[in-house]
Length: 120
Image (cartoon, rainbow, N blue to C red):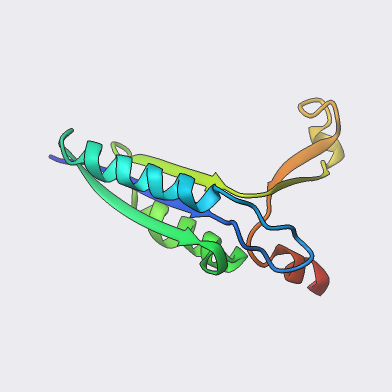
């Protein structure tokens, strides 16, 4: 039985204002994608890739990538999530303060995070 690798690769250089642009995140994702495509083909695994770049890396698209793509994996499969883009922090719930001494959780900044935060 062939094993599967399910990979969700997300790279964002161009964000909606006011989030500043980055350089190199999309190139990082392309490099990882090319590596996986070249390496996995020789290792006996079947590769299932989903790549989200820039405006395609919305909050909803990333959530769907987890639910519809990565959740296909079975117990013997491998799942890889690779994110290149901005990160941020938010206050951690009190029940996690023993795990997070700074009382902050790390977060990902999706393409449309600024717009999404405005809707809260």
